[in-house]
Every structure is written in structure tokens, then in C-alpha cells.
Image 1 (tube, rainbow, N blue to C red):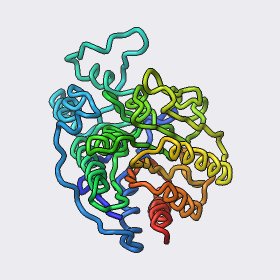
Image 2 (image 1 turned 135 degrees about the horizontal axis):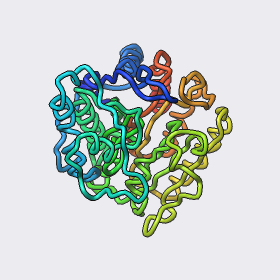
Image 3 (image 1 turned 45 degrees about the vertical axis):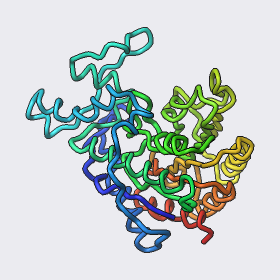
Length: 348
């Protein structure tokens, strides 16, 4: 397994997020990835390397140009408003909801923050763009590694911030660029006729679903907490099956809080059967380990040893596979849980 690690991830370090009505220290921190890297040093599953730079045109295969322009310059604009802002993160405070216009980009910075976001829990920091762009480079390098005749069966993008909540022109859920979607599109562009994206994060991959919802060439499957009670709330229901040419190519498997590994694995087996019937040429796994029983903001009950079986089950699809790192906020256990998945996938 090839592993591409984001050398700039720590430049994105939010100070505070809005969580359940309070400003609290961010759950999404550099230490998440540092624990994974430390565990990989103890239990190597493959060579770890930096990704090559990413080209803007490749990002535009998934994200809107004006959205990318905003992310690239947002921090400089934020500080230009007031030099004291350099000691603060930028958080949105106003949003264009139903019936409001989205087509005209405001010149006001706060308005553009709202235009391109959907929550107040995703701080934009001095290093957000550098970290997110390098993370996208990891996902694209991983997709390139498993494409065509290169002979690599699997590759992993170890990066933060995560990506599966980011859409065509919006950020949220700690995500700015959708690494799983970028990997899937890169696999398609490299010649794969069909690609499946399987999201096993506790939270629904709303950004990924929205990006491919009208397409028959990318199957999106997500196993997640019931959106009636769990973030991101407004997508992820079982009746969302796709639209137009994409009808039948989106599958959501919401599960109730408190779900243990037996029930969760049954959903995984069903998801993998749907992947097999779709007959893709490659698989992208949006790997969140916030399904862990000790996660502070999630409510499934998987134990660390269960992640070995998750890896083995994913390997049973027998497809070239790209992993993109998503959620997981029980920081001290994150490295063990992620490496358990990768070891299980590799048959260890």
C-alpha cells in the first residue's frame, strides 16, 4: 500500500468552533493525523511519501472556480479587514437560505463566508488553503497510483482537514475540498468507466452525494448516523436515490445511535454487495473512524479490534482502492483504529 501524507496539514489549526451553542476548542486538530503517523511508524503498512503539487484544473473538475478563488484568498482578506483578525479564526455568521440568491457573489467578506459555507463549526485559519490543497494532492496522487497498469492495488491519502462534507461550492463539517470526490473523478479521468465511493464515516457524506447525485458513472454509498438526529441533518435519508441519469446510483444506509458492530457490519455487507452489482473498476473509501465507541461527538459502538474486520471486508471487494482519511475525534485512539483498517485490508 502506498501512503501519501499531507506535509502541511498542521498549518490548518482552528482555535474555536461553534458546538451546541458554545464556542469550544476545535475537535478537528493536527494531533489527529499525528497519532496516525505515529502508529504507522510503529506498524508500517507501506511507504509514506509526500504528494506532488496539484494542478488547479484538476480541482475544478470537482469544485467551482469562484469557490476555489475564495478559499485561496480568504485569510488575506480576513486580516485586511482588521489586522487584529490575525489572532482570530474566520467563522461565518450569515447564510443565503431558501429563496435567497446564490448566483451573485457579494463583495462583502462576511457575506461570501456565508455564501460558501453551511455551518459555524468550521473555522477558516491562516493555513487552511495550504493544508486543504496539499490534502487534495494526496488524494489525487493516491488515485493516480492505483490507476491503469501501475500495479498498485491500494493507496491512502492521510490528510486533514477531512473532505467528505465539502461540495461543489461550499465548506462545512471541518471540510473544504472533497478528497474522496477528487479521487473518484481522477479515477474516472484516468480511464475507469465506473467508480464507487463507499463512505464509512459516522456522519453522512453530504458533499460527496451532492457532487455525484445526477451521475450514473459514480455510485455513492454512505453508512452513517440517522440524519434526523445526527449531523449534517439535511441529507442522508434512505429515500435519496439520485436524480435524472443518476437515479439508483446513490445509496444511504442510516443507522440509529447506539448501533454496535454486528448491525453496522450487516449494513457494510449490504453496501459491498451493491458495489459488486454496480461492477466498478475502482473503489474510493471515505474512511472515518468516528464510528468508534469512544468518539466524543458520535454515537456508534465499534471497538478498535472491529476495524481489522472492516479492512478485511473492504478488501473482499477485490478492487483497486483509494482510502481518504475523514473523521475520528477520539484522538488518542485514532492512530490504532486507522492502522487496524489498513492492516486488515492488507491481510495482516
